[in-house]
Amino acid sequence: MDPSVRQKSSPVSSKMGNRDSWHESLARAIRDPDVLFERLGLPTESLEPARRASQLFPLFVPESFLQRMEPGNLADPLLMQVLPLDVENWPSPGAAIDAVGDTQSRRAPGLLHKYHGRALMIATGVCAVHCRYCFRRHYQYELEPRRLDEWEPALEVLSRDESIQEVLLSGGDPLMLTDSRLTEIIRRLEIIPHLKRLRIHSRMPIVLPNRVSQSLIELLTGSRLTPIMVVHANHPREIAGDCEQSLRQLVRSGITTLNQSVLLRGINDNADTLTELSERLINVGVIPYYLHQLDLVQGTTHFQVDESAGQSILAELRTRLPGYAVPQYVRELPGQPHKTPL
Ligand SMILES: *Cc1c(COP(=O)(O)O)cnc(C)c1O
Ligand code: SF4
Image 1 (tube, rainbow, N blue to C red):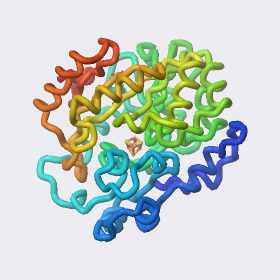
Image 2 (cartoon, rainbow, N blue to C red; image 1 turned 135 degrees about the vertical axis):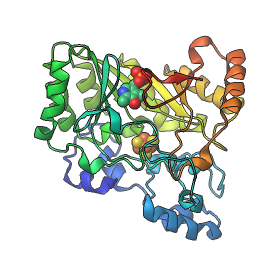
Image 3 (tube, rainbow, N blue to C red; image 1 turned 180 degrees about the vertical axis):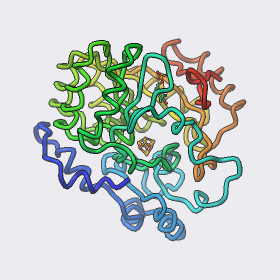
């Protein structure tokens, strides 16, 4: 997971007026725990552990996301999602490397097919942020396609299976691909007649909002495939400033935009926070989709919230929000034909 590899070779393609191009924003993202601590004025006794933990899974946080954090506060809910901690390296019995059965459902290089009617492409292994709770932090991305010709076997499987109507671009973060690369992939998918929809799962509209450029919107709305964007925000304070503006742009351009969150201890595990998150989302036209129970993966178990606590929070959300603003609380169990409602 080294975002610097891709950004060096990418042509600058954003046309967002006086905003930085997203490539420039990526290049300026913070990767050094020392810089993070200095920028936010964090207590230095936590720096050494952060340095240690970032050796296994590097720190990576874009400027726009940092701007939404409160200086000096180690418990800031945005900071907690990206701050490397020693606890990640403690043994966690019961935790797996592949908790969700990705390996079993791989039908071709880069192609996961678990559920009826839709298949998922691991479009890239890199992301614009490194979330400490990530369930794919151990995924072997180096085995997946990079060049277009390496996608041929996956495209072949998609062409032959007429039950598949929807392709999900995931990763990693598929919007780390340049617009021209995305265009190539989308053109190849468009010529498969039974495909109807293209879904993009990305955290970039949240953490690096200038990725939502006019050219990206044109690319998505200009396709024969109906576009669906699934963004990923966990806390209401993420939906602010340039992020709010980018979400509005997606919605106004007619792209169905949904949000998924992960239930995270100390970050969003209470009804007030999740109510406010849903409200901020629906106020800009984004529909809450899933609230995921954390997958038990090595290095992430300190974020775990009890299922019973999650259920009480959901019960509370139902009393406070319009029905369409209550996300489905789900977990992913290997071998099941859909995400399992809790
Ligand atoms: C989660 C997931 C999907 C999408 O499931 P939906 O319930 O349609 O959102 C598709 N494929 C794979 C492999 C997944 O893990
Ligand atoms: S953006 Fe998604 S895939 Fe990337 S580190 Fe965060 S949770 Fe994992």
